[in-house]
Image 1: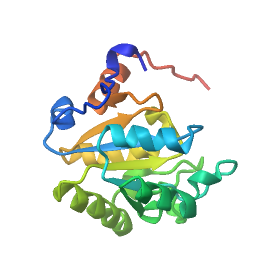
Image 2: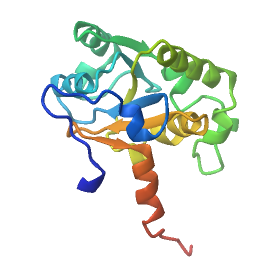
Image 3: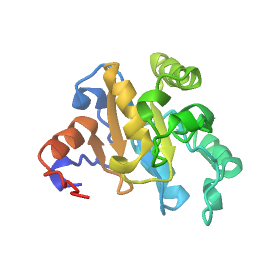
Length: 193
């Protein structure tokens, strides 16, 4: 992500309203952990005053990184003063229903977003946000451009008028509007078969 898109918090200072940066009243966050040590990941969340970490992995385990397995990350998040919610069944982006995939096996996010279980998960996120809690969705993918946190859940919430900001492994923050701007100015590569 180009440096012009990054916002880094100053030590001990978090802006009064990240949502103003996103141009909307309510804002939710995403944060991928990839190869980050758990302590660094939790510090990134604390830097943005996250209250609730919603785990949206379809399977709450990470091979080779057991610190992120559900039974380990939940207690670590709670010990760091945040709430942990597993919402992978509702917002995981990899449902069991074959009708929610195209012929090549790609998830059809538009269809997924209409499912009652997806709406239930969205409702849980929105309930937390309406109660003034800062919510971050997490999974293993650290690049928000490639993750269902942004491409499925973030898109749905953005279409409802909710701001989206992505906490990067470096600790920086990028607003969804900035990624959309970046994509609008990036030439598309078209395959000719």
